[in-house]
Image 1: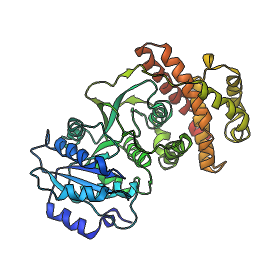
Image 2 (image 1 turned 90 degrees about the vertical axis):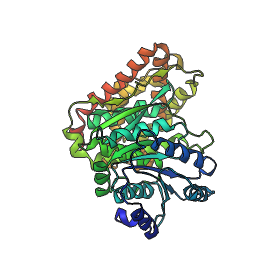
Image 3 (image 1 turned 180 degrees about the horizontal axis):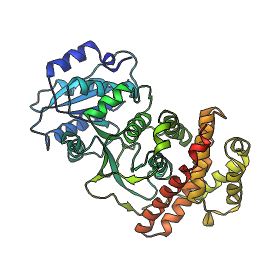
Image 4 (image 1 turned 90 degrees about the horizontal axis):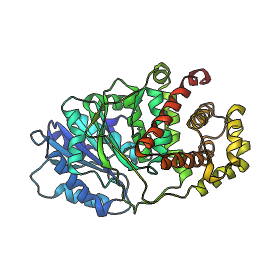
Length: 411
């Protein structure tokens, strides 16, 4: 369905009545009734800061909530106020995250917006200053895509630090901290690019649409930058998804996009950090250290139970590097970055060649990932804060080195 047709006729008419809007904030929400009004107040306050002199609007989309999210959004939009325009968008057909994002992009284009900042309503830690800082670079033509960067403890975001970010950065030649950041800002040119190419249109989950947007920016000629937003905070009461399903919903989309952007990553040879606005993120020590014994135990069980599966995914050279790891005790467990990067690339190639059902293949990565996290935490905990950052650099370089032979294997 063309993006413009996703918007219900009444929403298109309401957008037409608003006229041209320079700065747009779009919020997509699922079952967020208790916290939504407060978040929308924060978003509106952000638009009233550095972009106060520009015409602005807050757009809200309910992604099929089963609680009162839509009613809360409707009441907020209808309340008397003197700030930016407010509008609850209605979408034709079934609403999921991808349809919601495409609708927000289409609405921003209908308004002829210079920039759009998008927030997942699950985020609780982005303040008004953060909203303002995110959208300012795209409004001022200093960037086409602004991604968040966060300060965190060593054990936070290990799927991002050990797989999603280093793999994507190595592929597309631009080193970025977050692939799934919960918020971002897009300039008009990138909005048009994403609409024209249906970026994220079929994405059912929040992580999937974020990966689609970030990868589209990295793989295009867009000027990508990142902004430090402090600590990433998400409502702890939200339902938790098991690790294997999380891998399916995050690593799977990254692998699938390798198909779409093959020509781009095949031509990318060098990797450089993207420009950053604001202070540099920091990595803090863990207040409570997760127990790595169970992670190492899960790795060992995987070596016993999943070896027949892994033999269809990884060549003997990779497996030979894994066998000795199963003999190590947790206190001395190691999983070198170079071996881990090779494992991930082996899985990417097997995913591309459909050697196994893709869901089954991605779930079988779980014990290997847990083993890598255990080794990473051991290394980072022994190091100083600077040493912890050095451990991340080793992972990045390992993926960059492994990428050199990827094209020859991608048939």
